[in-house]
Image 1 (cartoon, rainbow, N blue to C red):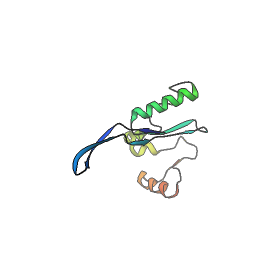
Image 2: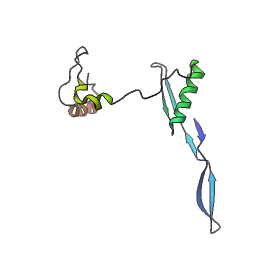
Image 3: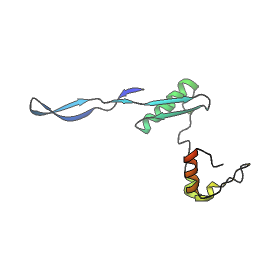
Image 4: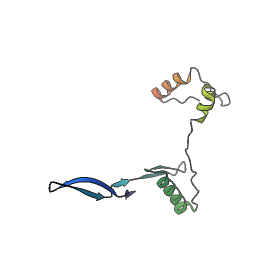
Length: 116
């Protein structure tokens, strides 16, 4: 989506004299809908714009402004609260991790394997 940002004033030189230039910078926002996962991804400059797009898209296409949840899809809170213990996957069939989270991170980044 393309729209104008708030009016901006900048100093300029016109005919050798100081002056001001007023204009509205152009901005581009992106909203991507993944029908397979029924999720949207939104890139905007502000949280308010993000909320507006999320609610308007949900309302227009799915009949509810709250169709798409607010907030982040992923969180690092388990790592913050539980540290390395958050990496245990004993409750997942075939899930086991060997090594520290640092070593695991290097392995995952290197070959895109998943930890569990």
